[in-house]
Image (cartoon, rainbow, N blue to C red; front, side):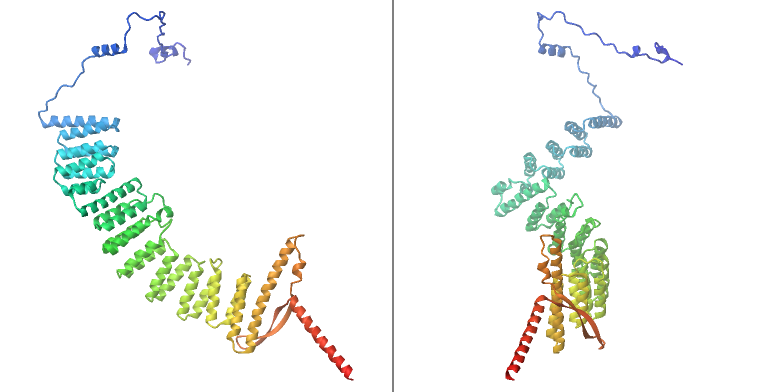
Length: 563
């Protein structure tokens, strides 16, 4: 069904013409000459005020029974609450609301309104002043002190709060209380000069420093150096309650990010707190509680601190609680294993003579860090100290078989030294050969040669000495030959710039030789080995031949002459 352009409004259809808003046409001023009688803005405002109607005020209500009073209070509270929802940041509304509750003698509700207002803007010192004046006017002195104390802590730079606080204590005749307030304020020194003695002035200086530290930690709660200075000040005074209060306030400032570098300074607050409780306060339970809270706070899945675990365990040992120490160290290995924790735990068990526990700990240690050569060496050293030579050798073999090691040279040296100390020189020699198959490092060759030379000095039979010394020389010759080959490859890779002839003249000749060796079971066998003959040795040999030939010719000539 099609709709007509001029639809009937009574049928529910409106056309564009019906909804069009028609504005009056602006009037044009034809005569722009000034009027004879001029009207000022002041006259307009005065006439408007004169013509203003009288303000309509609500009638005065007389309340005669508790029901009407309850309805009146409910209505007024609803009006205030609605107004607060609309203009929450208007402090004047909060003040009127609290003062009205006070006029109704409902101080609990009045306090509630003041506290809500402080949550909106605690930096407004007018709120604190009127709040404390209400408490003083109704003779709630302790409540007033609490308000003043909070006010000067949060707003220490507002002098009016300090003056009012001190004035209240002076009006009450509480000179000691006034001194305490002055201790927290920098002008306490002048006050003590008027009323106190030298000790009071020294206390005032402490109070001044305390005020400075309070200001620093208030500006930046995460400045842990300021907290350390503040704690040292309180420890010099010696008030346990204040010291604990400052420590608790300091450790409450947890670093915002779970990054270890942000926690490294913070964690020492806990350590100092625990040491204070143990050594100075001599309270065991609070010390244990500090360690427990600290360990629960650290995010061990991301990072941990071995120091705090070890301090907690050592504290339990000092309390003769070995079970507690083992539990702490066991939790440390389970949650955040570290080298320091394993080493310290093993050291403790070794001092107690629990060898089986030490072995289990080393197994856990190497299961967690199989590339740690230091752990392998220490484990083998433990077994050797127990005269378990086969176990130590098996540990070394497992160690060098690992695919990745952090310091393999340390491990191989420990293994070779172990075999040398046991008098197994042939085993040590085999280890050197195995090591040279893996690396051709110069230090390995030198160590091998020195090993053979030392053995030649320790042996008594001349033949064995010559054999060891010859082996040492051969090690040096092999190293020299290897270096020359490297040099030759470098010269060849340098192209036209390189000089291959410079190296080739120095290369040795390789000679295959045979020698008789005696096995461990006493049987003799023949083995082949490669000997190196260097150019200077060839020249020396030729000179000897020439010298012998000259001697032979001289001998033949003499015979011919004498005949």
